[in-house]
Image (cartoon, rainbow, N blue to C red; front, side, top):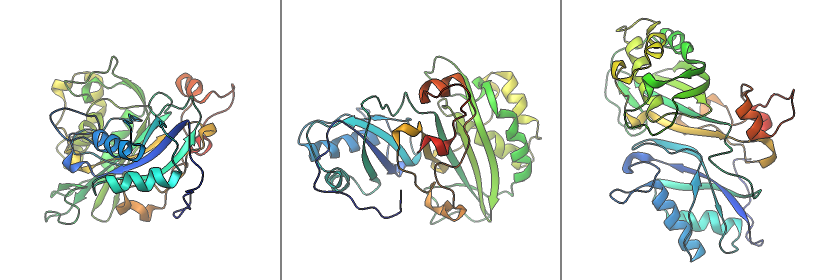
Length: 310
């Protein structure tokens, strides 16, 4: 998808529609609609309902926690009334608060499902590592004043790659039936004062990434050695784990789907990391029965994010 794309306003869309949604999660209880607090889901559904002049309900690729941001949250819904692509994008954005935006809209096959057909989810956890407190980045990065040993953090993180029981990194209130997840890759890099934990898996447990980030910061500060993450993983006990890192540094940057859905490719967020130049569609997804089933690939074909067409 080019950075600038013409939005058709002549052809009404029907059937199932996918949206790419970006939001600053600072003022929300998270993605999921709740009665007692504002949510991203409620704001988006209310805006789309105004465009359609009838109630609209959406399903997302992954629920984010309170204070967590997203640059590529994928949602889908069945169009209740015909509207053009421009009407859905511009109309939704006119009715959304300034901290939520629809980036694109496109028709998808009737069997597309944002949650159940996602092959992978990718997040970036951003740490501002400098002595003085942040100002411009205060809402989208976690501040750490102590110098971090990033190479040691990266080495420690590699113990998590693969399919494991991540019980030591799940929240006490996590509702998932299993703690097993397949972590595709995790990288820790420094870009000046920014330390970025880049992580992708088939799915994540509640608070899983923030708990991993908290443990990695302990390694970076020298409070723990590079075997610490492997040790925590082996315990399978969250009560013996480390602190949960703040939500403000976490960004949901990608959901990966099979190539046949042809979702738009776009630069990976957040925009303060745009200088890295990576777009969705540039990483290989490890083969697994789940990936093969969801992508419906024949035996012998290894899916990649590029082939998945996100």
